[in-house]
Length: 103
Image (cartoon, rainbow, N blue to C red):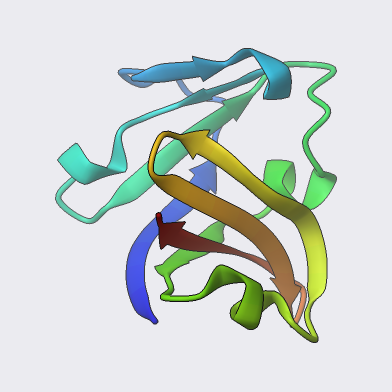
């Protein structure tokens, strides 16, 4: 497991790189950020969990997503946000954690 990025909810405007219509969510490209920060702006009525809308999350790249999910409280089950990447969110001591696997 290795650190990938941190996601921080905001109401400020940023240089948005993508809009995720299903989640009513704007995101920045953390790979272009010096500190690998992903800014997230949720629109009113976003179906995303309150925990993601209100708290920062930490993301890690893992070798086996299913193995890492075992025994954890799943906040968002596995999905493919882009080709070649499978991820899910868990809760860890009250903090959302994103686990990402390259496939």
